[in-house]
Length: 238
Image (cartoon, rainbow, N blue to C red; front, top):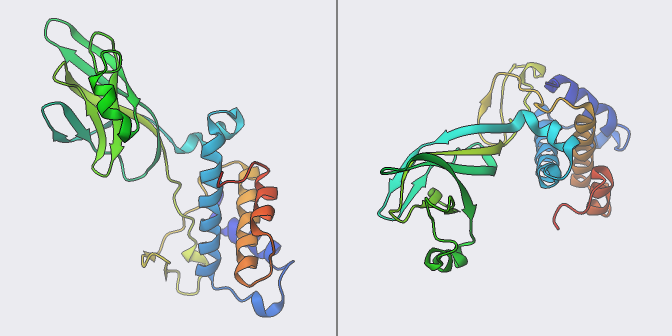
């Protein structure tokens, strides 16, 4: 883990190179707000390319939660709904352990469908959830992960892998009162560093934070172009 203190020090060092004295006077909470905004931008971008870039995936591995059993929240005649953890950012892999009388138990992968296609898939003999053919239809909604079993089998448990959201960076120990109220209205009294341990990632996050802070005082043109130069990938909003 890279300490919050180091993030603040590195931000100050880089930010001071670009702005005048009048614009340097950022509160500690303001510095951390832009650092955390930068963390969000960096994380969202890295997740997009993680499945095709092994180095990026290694960097995010600390945030990858494996083999998590999620609780049942709704049980209906043809489908169940399971609670997706609040910390989840993107579900990577999904499966159920299914059982059927006289057939025992087995793992069945969940196949995601767009909402508009679910009815057609449920009516198709090729895509309909089936214990025999070892696949089940699923979709995400406001209540959780929907899994259609169509009464063909029982779901013993539902298991997912996912990327969780990184914890926000905080440094109350560096303030005079050793605590502060953050931008979410939460009183912070304990330091929290950057969970990503790669120094390259930390440097990119601080560079993005400085870019955001400069933009906030009107010191940056072509923000997206500058951001993509830092990320060195295609535009994050594509």
